Length: 242
Image 1 (cartoon, rainbow, N blue to C red):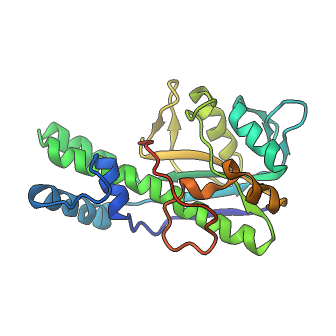
Image 2 (cartoon, helix red, strand yellow):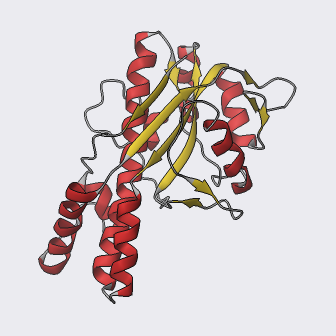
């Protein structure tokens, strides 16, 4: 079973993805103050951010009789269950990513100092880091799966369509069952703290041809990784923010 903790993941956020989160069109050219703020946020994060990722393969995946049970814990997502059924998934990867609490603490300080522009640009940079960490984790899983003649499905998380946010706490507790030691908390609302975090499930299947033949099972449409040798479909821009 795979288990990985990386305290120094690559965080080379693509400018196009950062601009999207800032609300600019993809081909918009940042100028003057916006350019200065974007560069400041990136430089601040490069010097102070402490991102991490955690990945663990599940020991048991039960998708029979209409249930979705992972390592003995039942989850409520119909969409994820259907995805796993269609792909005939046999296992899954549990993933947690975090941009580091430093980013959140600095953004809060900027807000209290009445610096809304700096606050917004750093907030969105932290969100871009979370998206980037999920993307690069997916790419690493794709590389591993390809070596073993398997395929990775699109990641899915509590709060996505047809997965109630209330399952966030259960997923976090499941991830904690092994060697996960990072300080992350799921509130009663389902919100994570630090908030620049994401918990996700990546399904894994040995039936590679099923993934190739069913577009909705291809993770590439949600993956912005450039020049990926495993890409099977063009990237479609996501609008989710963290």
